[in-house]
Each structure stands twice: as C-alpha cells, then as structure tokens.
Image (cartoon, rainbow, N blue to C red):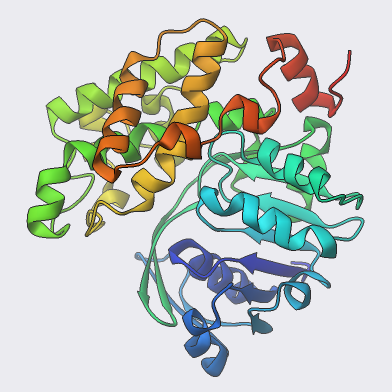
Length: 368
C-alpha cells in the first residue's frame, strides 16, 4: 500500500474515526480542528485509540500532526478529507481557498445534497484558481461515535459508497487516489446522483422529529434505529423516500430507494423498510441523540431536505412530505431553515434547466 499524505478536517465522531483508521492503515495523517481545545488530548497523546466491531479496524492511530492552523494542515496534503457537518462546508471552503495548490484532492464526507456545488461556488467567489479535484461521497463510510477525547469507535464500515467529482470527468482520478485505503468507494456517476441518493435526508430528520418526545424524556437513552423506527415511523420515512426518488426521476436520474441502499451498503434485506432497518445489525448499539439540537435536524434539514425540496419545486414534483418535515424542524428550533438552507438561488443554479444543470455537473461548463 502506497503511503500518502492525508489531512482530515474535523475532529468530531467521523473525523476522529477516519483519521485513526487511515493512520492504522499506514497513511501519514494530519488532523485539523478549528478549536484546539477539542483536539488537545489527541495532540498530547499523538494519536487516537480506535475500537471496532468484531474483526473491524482497531488499535492506536498515530498521527503525523494535530493542529488548529489551517495553512499548516493543508499545505502539504495530497488528499484533504472534509469530515464536518455540511452546514460547515461553506466556512471550510473559505478557510482553505487561499491555501489550496494544483493537484490536491478535496473530498466531502459526505456532501449531503449539492455540497460540492456549494463548495465550488465559494472557492470561485474567493478567487481560488488552483486546479484541484473536488469530490463528494454519497454517505459517510462509517457508522461511528466518539468514545472520549482521544477515542473513537467504528460500529460498521459500509461495503460500497458511491463517490462523484464536480465535474464528473474527474471522478476516476479521485477514486484511483484513494482506492488503496478505501476500495469501498465506487463511481457515483455525478454529484446530482450522489446528492439525490442522500440517505441522511430520509433517515435522520424525520426519525428524530417523530421521536422528539422520547428523545427529550429519555435524553436519547434508546436505540435510535432499532427502537425509534417503528412500523408507523417507517411509513413516514417511505413517503420521504418516494418523493426524493421522484425528484431524481424528474431530473433524468435513477435514484436508489432506501431499501436498495440498505442492501448495497450493508447487505441487508427485508419485505418492508421497517424489516430491513431492523435487520441491519450495524444499527444495534447506536443510541438516539441526547437532544433535539442535533445535526440530524440542524444539518440534514437545511443541507439535505431543503435543496431536494427546492429541486422538486423547480422541476414540478410534489414534495409535501419533505416540506412537512422541514416545517416541523422550523417549528422545533424556532428558525427558518429555508433561509439558512441550500436554496437554488444560493447555489447559483436557480435558472438552469435540467439539461443545463446536468451539463454543468458532468463537464463543469455552465454556458451553452
């Protein structure tokens, strides 16, 4: 396996797991976090303890560098893994724009919906002219949690995760760069496809909101997917899923259903979505959020559901179920997630036809 220089941006649940795993695989890893106090223990210890399921990746991941200096973190990196909630993508793009160099690869883990479109727009606005490859994963490769200040746990590594670059002609180069360490990544066709196959949009907001009372009364002391997904809750998830798939269809895309995704990512099946989720053993042991002030709403409503709904309304698809969940999220947090979210206007694509938008994500060219 060839050793490469990775920088992981973000030291939350996912960033710590990814940094530790990459280091255990023999890669040279720098971990960046905006707040040093959050990574101080990792810096002192020089790495992260990783625990895992059965024969999964585990051990001490020794890091080459741990820093809150973005220039230091980015300057020598070959591959930059952005592992922050997607509402932070805009800020990260602004931070790294002055420091990027030709040939670097930046991958969003995951992009949620229209993540790379937003990221590229910010880089362009900041005057970044470096010739980089910008890509996004369809979903996060790990089911993981932080187990302490310098500890992480991986519950499951997904078996297949689509990845696409913007433009799509760069996808193969991105996949080749990481195939030694992550053979699980496969060609995601284009970033509209990965963005509309965003399963966080289906599973996270509705499931959290429909379990709001239980989350507040127990502080999340129940298994989120196992106990939280009842047959009735699963029916609502199915509505969200159907609308998402229909939006994709209106744009000439064939999106996976949530049932198909569970089979692809975890090799599990069921006669209904409820059964398939219950059959996913990787979900066992994952507790619910302890509060409703959680990224399953604060991230997935504005950065996943809002752009899907906006695309649906732009191209003539009824998205009543998705809009209902967005509205409930606004009520719960006394905020306007439509204003905060990835609207087509913010993304700079509000006037593009389906053909023009497709051409942009495939070739990078906007003008016909």
